[in-house]
Amino acid sequence: MHEAGYTIKLPVFEGPFDLLFHLIKKAEVDIWSVSLAEITEQYLAYLQSMKELNLDIASEFLVMAATLLRLKSKLLLPRPPKPEPDEEEEELFNINSAEELFNRLEEYRLFKETALLLKEKEAEQQKIYLRSTGGQKMMVISRQQSYYFFWEGPHLLSEIMRSLAEAAAAAAMQPTIDTIDDFPVADKLASIYDLLRRSGKALPLSAFIRSNQLWELITTFIALLELARRRKVLLFQERPFGRILVAVNQDKLKEQEDGA
Figure 1 (cartoon, rainbow, N blue to C red):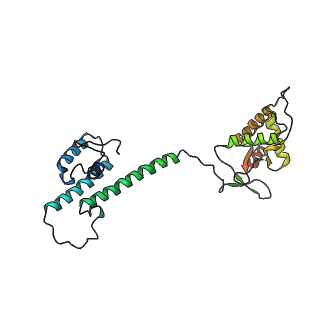
Figure 2: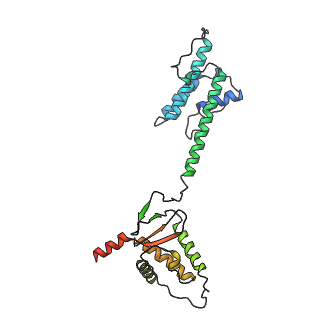
Figure 3: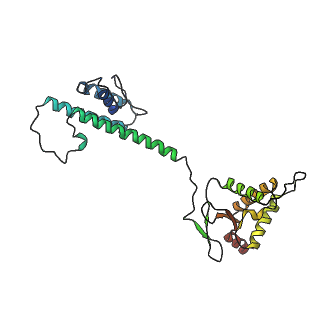
């Protein structure tokens, strides 16, 4: 159905082809009694009211009018001997009966409904963002030429926080409830970076957890994000859906050493 189309003074109208299909299907109007002159007159009036030509509506009208005109002219003229089929004749106009026209309109309707359905599916699919497996993104981060796949996706923050919570739970430490230790982000940031530099390799998130206190989890989470924002560390996975690892960004470290 057109969102903005022209209307004609007939019982039902959904557009040129839709109107014709409805009338034939319901047998409310004889197809040969449809006035082409009346439809054309109202169509031209509609075109004059438009600021620009809608090619979809125009093409549908022209096909419908040409098809009806061809059928009506065949009824008025004597039927000649059946000629050999012309292979060059366009299939769209190769219609010789009302039944064939009905089948053609039914086929058109199915294509039109399918196109609308596919358009809706496309709009829904555009709202879905899939996590990349990183299969085509890799970087050398050690002298042993080990390759690590980078992990990208909209769930990075929640995945890091979940991993930190699991690491704290695995530590099996009794949580402190009578006192709250102070975990400055700056100190945690320096501690994480120093540990990574001294280790010389990628470390899992559990390496940065000393207890299962909520404040340390939050501080570690913020410190990791800040280090990643400064491009001082890399967050990645060895394989899709694997554990998250953290490593020093050697390129950034080299820049700092050269600038020192």
